[in-house]
Image 1: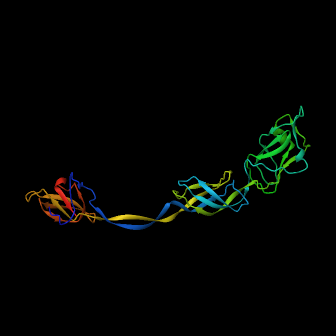
Image 2 (image 1 turned 30 degrees about the vertical axis):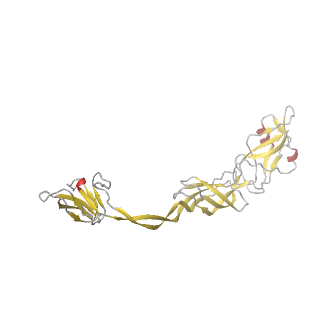
Length: 312
């Protein structure tokens, strides 16, 4: 066999066999390339901020984690302000040290026994806010706790929540009575730190990984027990540098047959380096034909695979 071309591969069941229709390139001389690619879906910019509620106020910037979307790990530095007035759910409000509060009691009408218990959710009256509901609690007849149930809207710092005699007695249940005079109210407040904040600005983002453009994320304040409702959409992904290696393929330079005669020569179909198929005939046993090609195709080849040797 003429091996002046270098490496030889024989079709068929040999150690270096090959098959019809396969890429016959041999990887050699790997080159390192520097590509700019999305850095694992890291978030670069966002849009469509919905301010929501449920965040700390009066503390400057807050740090938020995120849920939702296709990725993980993104965190946001956010700026907050007072929301549209949502009270903080489950918050215990401070009682106003007014003329009635310290001595307001709730008792069973029939016996005068003091009540230890809580109301159902009842409404309170304020100058600005609406829609919130509250639970009042008493110990040995003294009303001493007010908790936020529904957050409502429109509340502002400094205002007072007032509860009427009728609302209190209905909340504790029929047959119970307060010592509030007719027309009197129980005042809770003024509100101070009881209103949740909204996110008004995304200051910076640590982009995480795996996100896609258009993901909608919900922001949760890190270190807070409150549930935030602000959302933001992913607008663009950050870019990073990626190194990868790609080979330069070495392709066959000649072909040799171990079959075919002058009277009955063989024909081979090649895919050239220009990706154009050509069919070449006249192959006879022992002849080395110099030709650069990528593949040998079965359809236009009448030589048996095991009779064809390719040379590099």
